[in-house]
Length: 232
Image (cartoon, rainbow, N blue to C red):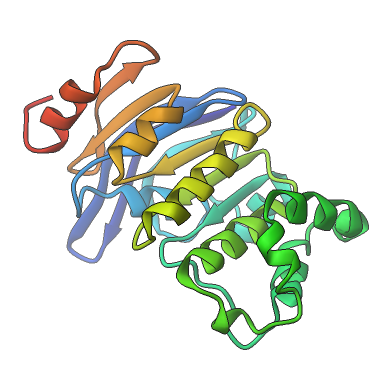
């Protein structure tokens, strides 16, 4: 489905990605782990066409998309839920969702019903400005907005960051409902939650994947040791 081959991304003199390689198959839930500054967010931005690729290739269903615009990638079925939510605070919840549906306007009503069934809290707040929502509600809105375009691959950057434990539970309950319906690549610091749904783990360091665990091939203790400074 998705193949990343020897991907390099530079920001001036800073090398964010240094030969990153991995692949995703249909309907997988893959968790991307790594310390701060390892290049995880840069990878997601590169996949969406929002970071400058110096060299390497990105293939989507066999087609090279390395130089495609973000718009074209969204049309092809990729969507990003960015770190920090980035909702449009002055627009209503409904207007934020409408923006997420720009690639599939004909399916707006069907998709709206679907995302509101996943996020019933948003149904009660449709006409409120997004800026008055709590952090957890804004995270739900960011996820719902991405789903409005009927993506085939959903990239999530730190979906539990800064949220209260009860809201993290709700977010992961929704991700559990989505599992198997859409391919997901999730950058996550919350090991327990990430491991609870992961089909595979990719450990990222110095701009590349340095360790991969298949489903059933990892323990929480082993991953914690690696995450906290062990050698891959």
